[in-house]
Image (cartoon, rainbow, N blue to C red; front, side, top):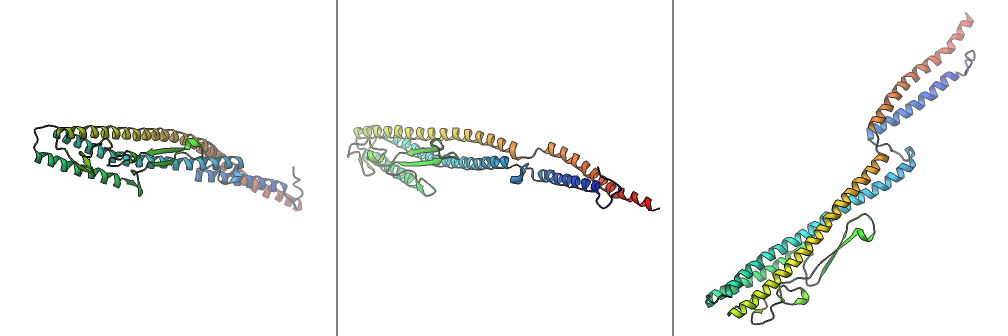
Length: 292
């Protein structure tokens, strides 16, 4: 307690001023939290919380990019799938024509027309394979294409997903993934040209095309498996990201209800502090009555 008869040092005013400054500082902190929505705006607010929240934020941003990577990977596989589906349509048309050629009711002109159509369809398969690219990278080549996708935010093995797209071509070389590797007779196939002059030749071609359809169906199924796994990874990563967001939010984000409650209390303390300081400054004036 201060002695009111000693006016050179007004301890009551100094104490009131000190607590008023503390109230103003705390009031400014609460207003900043309400303005930014963040409980921790500087490391000094909560150094441990700031460090943890920063690490969580880095992890979340890594996961966001990993989700984008998975989306890009699925897009790449969708491009490959679309091309294979187009080739499947062509093979089914080719099968239809070969079945037609296996009937002895056709004459030489009709068979020539079918052979010309098959040659054009075979060439179109080659064009589709050559044109299938993603960001300039050919997806179908004479050698297997292995692609690695970063599907997580760490260097752990499970955060890297490897996809292999087998070699494929519109030729007969099995080593290069030739769709028509089943065409073992040169009298039926010669560098993209078809010969279906007899029922036997047409039957041989039919067997080869059926094998090609089965091979392509297997490839499509494998791509579908890759896409499904990526979908599961995307769902799991999205859930993990949401959980990390919740954890970061509990540490770093402001509780508006609590901050508003504290703000109301501090505003009252600010007003009472100003009043107390005014009274403390006025108190020494009572000494003037001693000089009356």
